Image 1 (cartoon, rainbow, N blue to C red):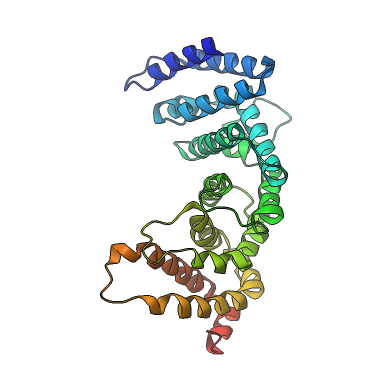
Image 2: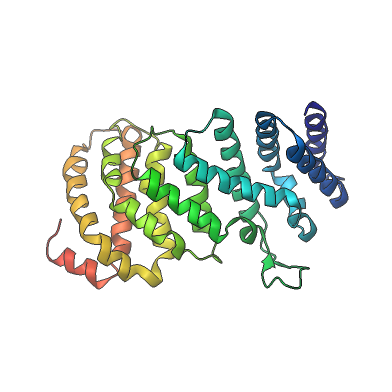
Length: 308
């Protein structure tokens, strides 16, 4: 393990120079060595430790420039990352994770976001004659299996359990939902039901109660429920907006009445803006979601009936 990490540190230092001389062949050799170690180490903790460090370092900008390459994309390392990410999604849904698990899961999710979003606009044709898909990091990581596990952790765990604001699940799912929102060429419908259920759950309303009046920054739990979930709906729900509005707008409008009664009237002109930034931001996100849903006849009907 130590020799591999020393080799990795030297490799990454070369990659981080402004004009790196690292070749594609050297990248592939490094990835070969990593995969060989991970596949043969008998100590799972050592394997997670190495993978955590490597994913953290690989998320740097100069590394990703070299990774935007067809040959590298097809390397077993990224299939290993894909399987590990899905394994962690399943594990986090049903059992308690170790600290090593949590750290590795976080760094993998960060790397996956960076790979999919950084300078990865070119699609490469697969050399496999039986494959009809083009090669991209989106196609490698954002699979049907991934979304099934992503949906399951939301429906079977997140909306049923009240975790601490900085829990690792909120941090990782913020990464993954942000990625799912930003990437266009995927089947976003696979996530609709779970995100709508988040917005319709008691957690959405209750999370407003956790925003301290003097809180200047939103924590990961608040950010996931109050920003990431509404943002996903606003960006990708146009073809299903009537369906979403019919199923959730009445409850959201009822929640709006409670939110405004409990929070909006607390504001005072004498309060400094920076002292109430978190609550102002949260309410503005809620209003943006209402404005989006107001595009549908169903929501306009409830507005006209004075639901809030």
